[in-house]
Length: 337
Ligand SMILES: NC(=O)c1ccc[n+]([C@@H]2O[C@H](COP(=O)([O-])OP(=O)(O)OC[C@H]3O[C@@H](n4cnc5c(N)ncnc54)[C@H](O)[C@@H]3O)[C@@H](O)[C@H]2O)c1
Image 1: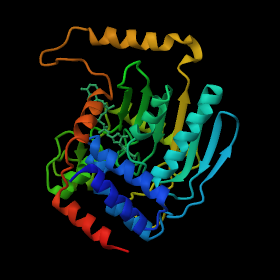
Image 2 (image 1 turned 60 degrees about the vertical axis):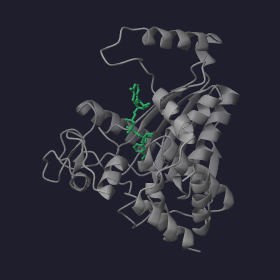
Image 3 (image 1 turned 135 degrees about the vertical axis):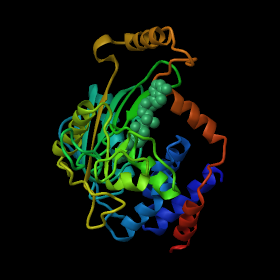
Image 4 (image 1 turned 30 degrees about the vertical axis):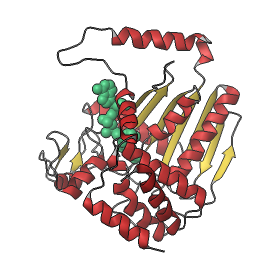
């Protein structure tokens, strides 16, 4: 199905579930963008979950989002349990505004929910010629190094910078070997997951997605990945006043209350220390790395975000293929009034 057509359907579904026009549009835009980025685990596969949470009012369909100015550079947002897309969209736009004024914009957000891909927000800052870091915490999926039980989320780390050409540098990576959404989609579709990304509940390596969801996911790079996940939990949760230390609720499995996810956005003017030379310097940096001798089978050394950008442009011209069970969800949700 054409992406504009699906976006219209998703927009209507969000309105059926009581989001106002602006919030429904933001949420539908981001959900479909995940599909176009080639991240279906953060796209339509999550729609039913968002709607169930909206229906139960544990995502607040009519939030009173408060933006408190702490200084010219720093703002603090209480999202009042809004859908994460909306809170994060306000957050990144506020951080960009602050950075344009003072050189640095820092925004902390509490009482939010799952916000999709960090790239959505990073690319907005980069399009305004700014450098950006985005952090968010997530429900327990990963055992801290040395522990038997999951506590950290897949807590993505995202960094973006203008490159002086049309394709931004956006490193957007979860700290798990594989993101949890991919395991959920595999479980839903009955597909296997790669060996070495998760353990079952008995601590044995598994390729069964359902068993992996009941067990623990493995972090990238052992204790180093565990440390990075911990850092993200501190920055997004401890610092912001949001849930942390394993208390962010799983949006699919725990309907006992709002998630209270935290996000942190830090935006900088690239000219802070080297003036107008930044673009010249980053171009030189990327050129040097791309010219390195390549290992067999590699045609081009890509910088983070490059492949996703190509994929996005390609996907804009193609139909989105919707799995049968998700198509059923769409039909049911669209019929709800
Ligand atoms: N909101 C949440 O709670 C949450 C939690 C986890 C993940 N996520 C999102 O899930 C998405 C996927 O995460 P992921 O860890 O599966 O990402 P991934 O493994 O697909 O990519 C990680 C990074 O590596 C880069 N990359 C990939 N191939 C490359 C190559 N050949 N050369 C150079 N760079 C390359 C990508 O551009 C990306 O920046 C992210 O957008 C993340 O924000 C969200």
